Length: 324
Ligand code: GDP
Ligand code: ZN
Image 1 (cartoon, rainbow, N blue to C red):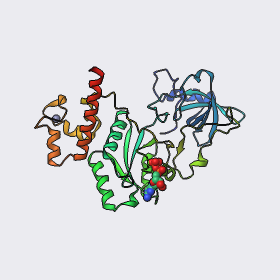
Image 2: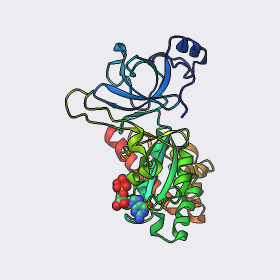
Image 3: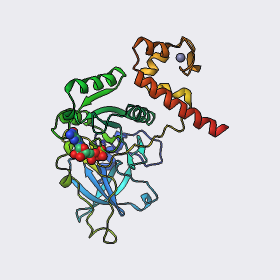
Image 4: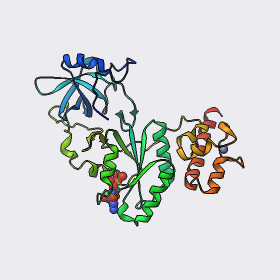
């Protein structure tokens, strides 16, 4: 994600995101564009265009609730003491609940090739959830140092065939980390996946000097002695930010109607378009369903179809319990 180059509209106004025509006005008013990278006890660290970090507080009318989140594009009025006041907030393109970050545009679904053993069903779930949330998704097979290259290649290939971008990494040796970093350039990203797969290790590998890069809110500035930090965005060398708190482990698929599930799995969706039973087919029971035939032919991975069936059953049960 780039820093905003136009003054963003007020939070509630349905104006275009980049009101370039407003930029001269904002500049004339002495406002500087930036992105909120961390927040704590009423203080916000904003990374300004150019990279400088500034500790900011909110203009009074912005103080209600979550009107400003980490990830928000903001316009800041610098104050003579070296701090600033957040005057305006750009319209959000997305909002994750956990961690609470605005404008995330890419999710990295991390799995270990070993230790722990891959959980393909969970991976497929995360990928569907990312798509449901409108995020781009990248599959990251970590711990490549622990398995033969052929094994890593097979799993990377499985997901490329399914229609995803996929790569293998080792947070331990650095293998694949530059490629991952390059893919994250220009985005606010979050890593997701089960515990132990190396998400924290990857964040450290992606942002080796993260500790110094974004300031913590100094205890002197916060109220009380203990300032609890929430999520931070760490700047990536190639541009963009990655959230230091992995997120997205619980699914937001609950609201989904069962028949809409296939749209969230690109390989299933591709076959479903060929299905003679049309939009009503759930691709489970009908003998000549194109999706089932693709599985028998071997052009749709069995593991992906299994995940589809499992998720479908869950959504059907949820639906039944809502209307039953
Ligand atoms: P998280 O729970 O997903 O954040 O996982 P961590 O980053 O805490 O890593 C879990 C364990 O796996 C730690 O002991 C790491 O040192 C180890 N680990 C992480 N990445 C790799 C890797 O690429 N290769 C190997 N061999 N170990 C790794
Ligand atoms: Zn079908």
